[in-house]
Image 1 (cartoon, helix red, strand yellow):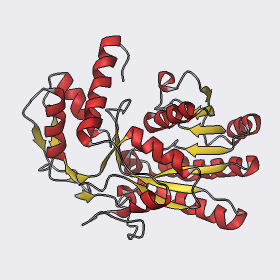
Image 2 (tube, one colour; image 1 turned 90 degrees about the vertical axis):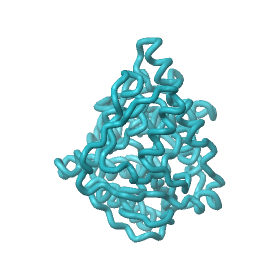
Image 3 (cartoon, one colour; image 1 turned 45 degrees about the vertical axis):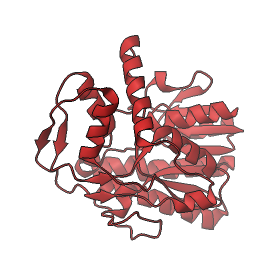
Length: 310
């Protein structure tokens, strides 16, 4: 089919593009390259440089390409930026999503929207199902939740079947080591440079780390699903210190970490229950943490050898 991917030059978006191309789809990427990179885009996909907030550029891309599905991954994804610039966060994640929904409505394309689990649910004492109370602690979670509600409204108003996916902490090749959620890339980057990794607080904060390739498969599976919201995670809790130990084990590099003061407002527990995705999408995370970390470390080393960051 014809698939349009917003943010397809970014970390997760480029993995979705790779999976679509591997499936044999015709793929158009719309990305403003503010965070994504041209070299991330699969050579068999077409790239249009444009901002999802520009209705003219977005509308033209949809009209000319006529996609049957739109995978909407373009976003302002840094929690710290959302706190400092909630107006910018809402502009991209709320108004940008509305622009995508309008363009998709005119093209009669189904939208699969990348949302977030941890930033929407807040503290989770146990793996959180989709029915968990939605208590975002930062504007980023609120803007993503607003995007979900717009999808649901369009489904009711226009009879569409758009789907929202609440991702866990995604990691893998091409992850930005400077992003708020890029702890795996940050750890590996410092280990590769021979610099001590930094841990905020006591390192006992736990997250649900899910491999980017698995996330891409879930995202493709959602295209055929009925309207709804699905968690995309492993259901397994991994602390920051355990993650660091795994990174050192995989890389073969051991450095004593530096413990910094805890960051204000940081979640202590964020783990997702993905059983609904298993039953409705036929999807389960297939990549173990050690396996995914090994693939990520290998891509970093290959990028260093080639001179191309990865």
